[in-house]
Structures are given as C-alpha cells and as structure tokens.
Image 1 (cartoon, helix red, strand yellow):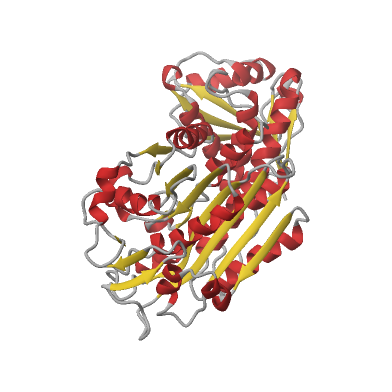
Image 2 (image 1 turned 60 degrees about the vertical axis):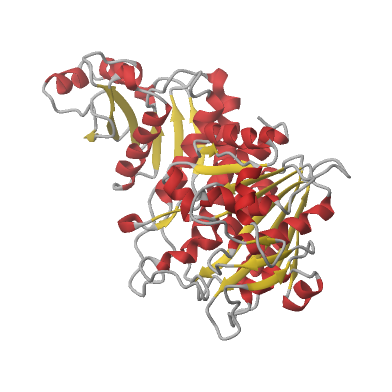
Length: 499
C-alpha cells in the first residue's frame, strides 16, 4: 500500500530515495532545478551545458549522489518547451517520472516537477492527479499466468516536495481523493481484465456483496433469474436466454445524504461476455468482449469510492448482468420481447443487447424517485468511430445533466463529449410489429442506441455515457483503463459539495 504526503522546506535537504525534478528545453534552470543547481555548486548547469541532461517531454536521466543533495538519486525529467507546457503535458511528464523510478528500487519518491499555472492545475487537483497517475503506474494486470509472479514495486511512499506550507490542506485532500479513486480504478481494471469464464454475472453479484460486507454504509441485494422474471424484465431475459450462465440483477445502495433526499442512480451494463448471440460477431478481437461489463464494473467501483470517501449524498447502483450467447434457446432476430415498462421491442439484431438489459434497469430506477439517472455502458462501436478512444460519448434528455458530466470529465482528466439526441434519431427505431425496434440502421448508431434508451426514461433526468472507446485498450497494451471512474466520482463529489 502506497502512502501519499507533502513535504516542505529545502529540496536539497530532503531525505528520499529518489527526488524527481524537471527541465525545460531552454537554458534557464528554474524551480527545483535551480535549487539543486545552487546546492551542487552549478553541477546541474554544467551537465546541462554538456548535453547530458534531457529536455524533451518525458525523457529521463537518473543521477546518483548529486553533490550537496541529500536524496540518494535525482531523476531529471524533460518538460519540453516552456510555452507548450500545460496540464496534459505535465501529466505525461509525471507518468514518465513514475515509470522511471519504478525501474529502480526506490521506496520513497519525492516529486518536485514544475507545474502549469494554478488556473490549469490548482493544489487540490495536483494532489489528486499525482495519486491517480501513481495508481496507474503501479497497477499490475491480474493475469492467470502459471509462472513466477513479478516482484512487487518497491515504491511505498510518494511525496509532493517543494510546495508551500499554505498548500498542505488542499494537497492532502487531493491526495486522499485521488487514492480512493485509484483504488476504484484498480477494481474496475481487475474486473474487466478477468476472462469471461471467471467474471460471470454471478461473480459480479458476489463482488457487490463483498463490497457491502466490507463497507457498512453499503447495502447490496441480488435478484436471481426467478426474481428477475417476477420483475417482468423480459428484455433482460431475452438476452440471457442463450447462455447456461444465469443472469443477475444487482441493487446497491449508499445512504450518506439527508434522509429522504432523492438519490443519484447509476446504471451499469454488465454483459460479462458478448458473442453477439445469433447475430454472431466477427471472430477477430471477440476476446475483448469480456470488457463488455465495464459499465457494471464502473458502477461497483464508483460505489466503493463513494463509501470510502463517506460522501454526504445518496447513491444507488443498478447492474444488469448477463451473458449473450448463441445457444439453442437464444433469442432470434425478429423475436419480440416485452420490457418491464410494458413496451414491446422487436429484436432485429441480437448484438444490440446492451440497450435491452439497460431499458429494464432504467425502468427499475424509477422506484427510487431519483434526482438524476446516469447509465454507463460499452454500448456501441459507432461511438468509437465517432470519438475514437479519447472521449466517452454523452447523450441524454437533460442538457444540464449532460453538460455537468462533460465538465466533470474535463476536471478529472477523463474526457467526454456531448452528442445530439433529438426525436429525429428515435424515428429510425420504428417497427411494424412492436412498439419499438432495438436498432435503427447504421447511420448515427451511437445516437439511435441512446434514443432507444430515451424511450424508457421519460420523466427522468437522464444521461447516457457510452464508454465503448475508453474503457479498455487493444493491441500490445491490451487491458482495462479504469475509465470512467474519475469522471463519475468527480460528478458525485461536486453533487455532494465536497469540491
């Protein structure tokens, strides 16, 4: 477990295994670099003049036992051009410093990198961002390899050094919030990275119960298949029909706010593996469909963070958990299911299954008379086409709520972008045989998916977060990203008045 703190006073006198400082690409040593140069009687400047120190963004150089400096190692990190240095480039440089320090055996790292203007990165977000980045650097994939496990990182303490004493309270708050968010991201990454034969609907239900057992402020209820049928969730059951794995519907409650105050309801898509059903997916990259439960994982992780921070707000988490398989009992294209709301749905494509389980979960959310409802889902490849892997998509029937989520993403460095959602898109979902079809053609696929959900959220303040492009990485870096936990926690922190 890593410990975070801030240290004040002379950097040259700081006792640490490794002290990280930054250098811009001009010839002017400022901030921490200037302090250490003075302590070492110009040694840093001489190394800089000889071309032995980095200056390009993210480049690093380790110096051992720099004269006049108490820290055993000094890690010099290139910051690039001073004029181009902003919050995003600062994050990249901090990540580079963490990666470089973890290659050694430093148990205590002190960060004294220069930072952007306070308007871009204040003391609170400085602390929170460092804790967030440290969690990402320290994360190790929970793989199932049979060989010897790699040695755990030596880092046990991370200090923000050289900051004024007046910043202590804001830094401590940011570090504490960041550590809790980082722990939530670890839970989400772990759940997403598990294979579908381990992380099943029943496994997600067990995780929810474990979280409730570990946090007295959390309550978890799990509905089995028979109970789901009694709830008349016909669309959810239509998705799970083809699988031998039974579905689960999970309800988590956190009551930290005023008694009777309307809660925020988070609804997560929990398709623990998605083959596409009878509308079978292309085999290429189908293994990545184990991540189709990241909406559900985001809800569980966010509930963990909310409980850890004891936020003065009421939050409900709903998770619809299923497998989508092409078994002999599987729903067929053209079948019609009846949702919990009573609306009938013509299922033209069984690979558009996420919206089917979410529509029943969104209907269930009504019983809490919520202040706001946010569903989180790896819903459409169309959203990836539209926004790539940088932004999550936001849509909804409440523009103020959608803007709130977009701003939360910007503040948390977990960006989202609002897409339009008008009646024009809902018209693509007309059916000759049922109240609504589950797909509306190729055009605007991310938006028509949201338009489908919008049919089940009338009267609610609702927003939809499509995380298909942001929840995981493909290729050599394949794995869960931990997004959008920072965005969701930022949203709830602001709703609770904690920042």
